[in-house]
Length: 402
Image (tube, rainbow, N blue to C red; front, side):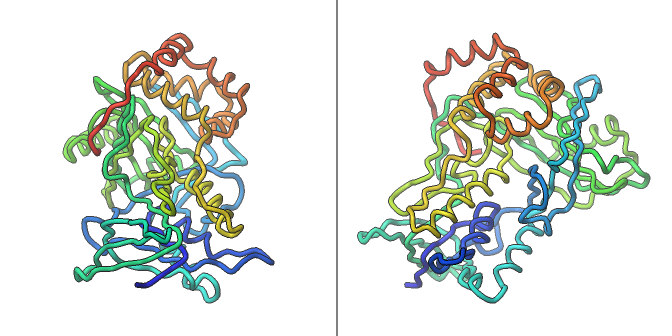
């Protein structure tokens, strides 16, 4: 049975980020661990191409894979009124999954300790804890041949088979077009983070999202926070309306599309499932429940795990967000789900009234209590307090997989 110190299941953002960090060693530290990174063969189990966005200051670890970055963000209300915020020295960055994987693969092919990471193609069926306290990853390769990998630690980024019980769950579901227009139609300096000039659904909210990569090219997405995804035709109709009648971009060629669903939930996602088996990434709670952002939290989680491995400690992934941030997210999700808070108005006022540096740190869960209060008093206080008071009495219930 092939063995490794660590097996990482899934080569998405979380798996690749952790694999990228584990070979690193500091002077005087123990040797880098041997790592097997397991991803399904090409087919329906492999994740589709995706785009990840995050903000950070200065030069980042993955800057060579960044498609574009911006230091201006804009939010528009239903009537087109705009709040434009300068976020320097932070920049809002966009990475496409193909470029990210290519960067990580290139670095892991370099000679030296990085060669201790090997790629394995297999569809994983189970992860079992063995009597000696190690773990075994079991699956099959593209030819149907059984694959077994034994490891001291396993980090699993696959979604849990059943979503944990929650008091509230909304789905952030979206479809995006990468477009090229015949005439200049975009401001390449500014991201439209939330444009609420879209028809609002009966339950939840919707908005447009524009990431310009040039004056004639952009990723344009239609996004909803709601109970269920739309059909592909319904997304395309919404995108057609938004690009032509709201943005007025004129004739455009759709170069490619992407589509996804992000659960926004107050469920408790365990980061340790059994003995030497841990969950990472969205499966380990890295998705911010109130916004759907995940990539930056994945990097914090990966850093912490790699430091623990190098120090010889049990590498339990830390909570990606503090308990206070998770509680505030639970309150907001419930307030949005019940309709007590108007979603478009809430997010527009938040960007209008809270200074950008504070707001970005708040969204990262990196604020102190008094700063959270500064943000809190700029929200609809009475509906939020009513919602916070009822949360402890609400039962958690099961939701179907998205």
